[in-house]
Every structure is written in C-alpha cells, then in structure tokens.
Length: 325
Image (tube, rainbow, N blue to C red):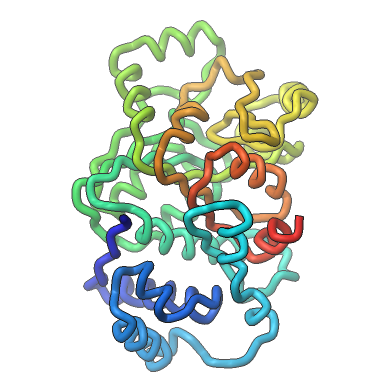
C-alpha cells in the first residue's frame, strides 16, 4: 500500500502540494474522499487544504467548460487500460497551444505529485533520461522519503536538448533525500565488442545487476519519427531509424525500440547500448510513464500493452486520444 506523502515544512513545497491537491479536485474531477484516500488523509484535512488553496490564491474559482469536460478522464483511462492510477495534466494554455514547453512544464508538475504519491520508504527507483524526465526532476519539490535509492537507468549520455543522463538521477535522488547509484559507463558506445567488454567489468556489471531488482521506474517514451530524441542525440542514424520502423518499431524506451505490443526489437544500436533492459523495467512492481504530446500515441499504447506501465502521467490532449482510439 502506498504511503502518504508528508506535508512539507518549506513554504514553497507546501504551495506545490496544495497546487497538486487543487489539480486533482478542480482539474481531474476527483472527489474529496478519493483524494483523501490517495493521500491517506482525512476528508476534513482535504477540505481544509482546498479552502487554503482558495485563500492563498492558488486557485481561482470560475466555470470553464473545457475543464469540466476533462473531469473523469483519469478514471476512464485507468479503467480502459487496466492501470493502477492515471494523472492528467491540464495546461492553462488550453489544448490549442502549440508550445510543447508549456504543456511539458505542467506535465512535469503533475508528475512530481505522482512520484510523491507512489514512492514508498525503502524503494529502489530507476530513473531514465530525456527532455521529459529532466523536466520532472527539476519540478520535484524537496521531500525526503526514508531509505530510498535512485538508480540511473541508462549510462552517461547527453544532447543539445537536455543535460547528461546522470543529472536526472542525481536530481531526483537529491529531491527525495535518496542514495544515488549512477551508471559508470557511456549510454552508447562505438561497437558491440566495446559494450560487451564494459558490461563485463565488475563495477558496471554490479550496477546493471542492481537494475534487475527495482521497486519503481520513472521513464518517458519516445516516438520513432525522424525528429526523435534518439536522432537529435546522435544515438541512432537515419538508416537505423528507418530499419527499426520497417521492423515494426512503435516507440523508444531507454534508447531501446519496442513494437506495438511493447516487445523489444533487437536492432541497431541494441548491441551498443549500456542501460536497463526492457525486461528490467517491466519487472518493477511500480512503473510510472510520463508522456507529453499526441505524437507519442502509438508509443504510449505500445508501452501499456507491453505491461510496462502501472501508473501514467499524460497531458489532456493525449489522454482524450487514448480514450477515443
């Protein structure tokens, strides 16, 4: 059973928690009882917190038809796809906004709420890499969870879009007050022979072995279009992407291709990657997928169908497409 997040003592952290409570009530349409159950608090406490939100100006009460229409989306997605929980991020710019950065910022704030909701004392947590995960790590408030460990899911990698992969793991660990286990190898190397040699080194072998016994994973899923982050980061060539698509690739997790059923496609650069396997991610009891953008529809469905997701954080536009598809 998930442990309730403790109320933060720092003012900014308290505001963040109140904002997340308000999102659940006014944005996702959860009842006070449902929120109280999720946070393991009394209904009276939730009522007081919602009142505090109004008094502090965190929420402004007004009727908005679009927001009302979003009510129940999370529950509908949870039931349709058999997930343990779903969090829908509702961006203030509206669904017509073309600014991915605006939607991603709100998604990251909601994901930070989800993490505090799901993480339990003593958990070993695997953290992936990418633009989405970097935004989530930055958005998390400081909130210590006793005895937690954070493990880097993919070796050191960087691109023009986001900092090095180890920074995501380190940032999440700092926010949770957790012990951090980085992966002391590049995320991708020049040859299969070098990858094999590095993975046989005792230190790296032990670090990779740790990834097979995770309690929770926090990751995103990429699409397989020509502008995917895999290409931007120089991890996959145009020819490799085309080859993966011909073999049925629908999404990318930790630089590994998956097909529409969430099964790994072992095509280049598969044998040059130093990272958690798809089986490692699937084995974790709690699997949090954070995804933003309708271009990730096929990838998101593939991850869900493959049993790689128990908890989902998604923007409203993609949530509606997932419901109607």
